Structures are given as structure tokens and as C-alpha cells.
Amino acid sequence: MRIGLELTEAARISWSAIQANRGRGALTTLGIIIGITAVITTMTAANGLARTFREAFSTVGADVLYVSRMPWVIVNDFWMYRNRPAVELDDSERLAEAMRGRAIVNPTVDTSLPTRYRGSTLDSTQIVGTTEKQIVVSSAVPAAGRFLMPFDVRQRRMVAVIGHEVRERLFGTVDPIGRKVYLGEHVFRVVGVMEKQGGGFLGGPNFDLQVFVPVSTFVKVFGGRSRDRSVTIAVKALSHEALPELEHEITGEMRKIRRLRPGQPENFSINRLDTLMDAYNNVMGVVLAIGLLVTGIALFVGGVGVTNVMFVSVMERTREIGIRKALGARRRGILLQFLIEGGIICLFGGLAGILLAWLITLLINATLMPASLSPGIAATAILIALAVGMLAGLAPAWKGARLDPIEALRHE
Image (cartoon, helix red, strand yellow):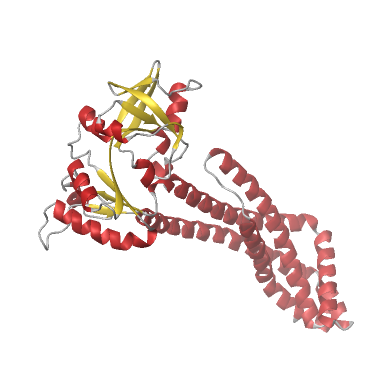
């Protein structure tokens, strides 16, 4: 009960002192407001980037392996990868035969061409040659019409399935199904429209600006043999648990298909979503650490300001402390008084910082990327503000608690 009474009394006196110096208290909180706002905005932006990254590459598939000429992430030896022979459509057909019953194999090859419908033109659209298995290895499905069918591939039909953004920018309110579009100089008939997928994150592919055509048609019309137009083979595992074993099987089969002797290095790469995630996490880890370091400096500066004000407060109230001690106040009560005062000042700064960070988050969400201020981040910010206040007030509180009551009473 005694500790509870001391806490209540210390809180009452601290609040009275803050109210008596509102202007000084408000100015003191500015450093904390800036620091907390910076911390929250950094964490919110990092979460928003992570969410955008996951959404942008969600169609890649966590249970899909991608065989390509070059790895997705190149750390060094670029020219070694650059000089590899292209992966051919024949390689995909032979791999599909070898993996029959164990995995789903789908080839893709792409190029960038202008797409035109009447008077509307998209200067650069990704044209993807693929098969009907694309919607099996990917999570995307048509929102209207249909996707490619096996007979489209067999008969090399001039049909296309357009992305969501292609439909909006070329056709507007016109129903594109059955309409004819120009892909480069060639006419294709639209048979489907894909659902909205997103993309374009950090220079990555924009999945809504893609146009899918039969891979056989792609090779006939645009050509399939080019070092810069290598085939990518998607191999979907029957289960996520089978992925590690499947990777070894694909490596063995591709070495046979590419006629590599034992000891020869692979002239192909097997990529997976984990590769992108690891690279992203490494980069974002460094960025977040630097961001938090900078915001930590802002909080440190704010804490120094609080410490300075608390020292002034102790100096101004030295006689008051002497009177309280003469009436029986203990060191612990004096210590709690100034610690609580510093905590309250920083708590108000933290709450104001949360409000300001919330407004900035709304602006980020409206203009740049999806972002939201989670309750967890807000609670963390409040705890940080309280901790800064307690630490900033510790030295002044200790000085006030150790004052000699006789000397304090003599203070003018």
C-alpha cells in the first residue's frame, strides 16, 4: 500500500509540475515526436514494402521451380552466366516427358512489343508464349473469357489472353473478348482477360501488362531461337514437401538433356521464390537497420532534450524537495516523482508522434504503396517513448533524490 501511495502522490505532483510549465513541456516533446514519427514511419514503410513484394511475386508460386539460362539473383560472374547456351523449347518437351506423373512442366518465352487496338497503343507490353498449363503453375486465372487451350497450342492459333491493365488502357469500357489486337505487326484475337495481379515492384515485371499467346504461335510468329530470348521452364511439384527432392531430379534430367559429362558445371539455373525472398530480406534488413539507426539518433537527441529540461526542473524545485524531505518524504518518492514526470512528457510526445505517423501512413498508402499502422507498431512506439522518458529522467531524478534536505532548504 505504501508503494501505491507513493506512486499516486508522485504522479499527482509530476502532473502538476507539467501543467505549471506547459510551454516548456510542449517544446521538450518535439524531439520525441520527431523520433517516434520516424521510427513508426520506417517500420510501416518496411512492412508495406514487404507486403507489396509478396503480392507482386505471389504468382511465381512457392511450390514451383524455374529452369532458366541465368539465375534470378546474380552476385558475381555475370559473364559466365551470360555466355551459357539458351534453354530451348525442345529442352522443355524432353523434361516434361522425363517428369511425367511426377510434376507439371510448362515452358514460357517472352518478348516486349507495342500492343495496339484501333487508336490506342501501349508502347511496351510483355508478350508471353506459353501453354494451357500456365494457370496450373500460376495462381492467376482469367476474369473474363477463357485461357489458352491445348488445341490453341497444337494448331498455332493467333489468339491472346490480355492482362488487366492492358484491357483497361487499350479497351476502356469496350468488351475485349473477340476483338482483334496488334502485337507488333501481327493480328491476334482476344479470347480472355486475366484477373488483376499487380507487379512492377522495384522494376520487376508488371503482371497486368502481359499478353499470353500459345508458345507454338510465339515461335512461329516472333521466332524462338535467340540468346536473349531463352525459354523458362516452370516445374510445379505435386506437393511443397517434394520440392527439395524434385530439384535434384530436375538437375539430373537437365544434365542428361544438355549432355553434360560428369564434373562439368551446369549451364542452366534452377530458381525458386525463396531465392527472391532471401535477396529481398537481405537488402531490406540492411535498409531497415540503417533507417532505425537514423531514427534512433533522432530519439537520442530528443532524450537529451528531456534530460536537460529535467535537470532544470530539479534545480528550480530544489527548495520544494528540501521541504518534502523535511516532512518525511523518502528518496524513493522523489526518484519516482521525476521518473514519472519524464515518462509523462515522453508519453505525450509518443502519442503525438503516433498521430503524425498515422497521417503520413495514410499519404503513403494513397500515393506509393499499401501501408497501414498496426496496433503492434503503435504499442511498441508507446513503450519506446516511455522507456526514453524513464532513461532521460533517471540522472536528474537520482540527483534530486540524493539532495541533502538542509542544503536544499537553504537553496534560493
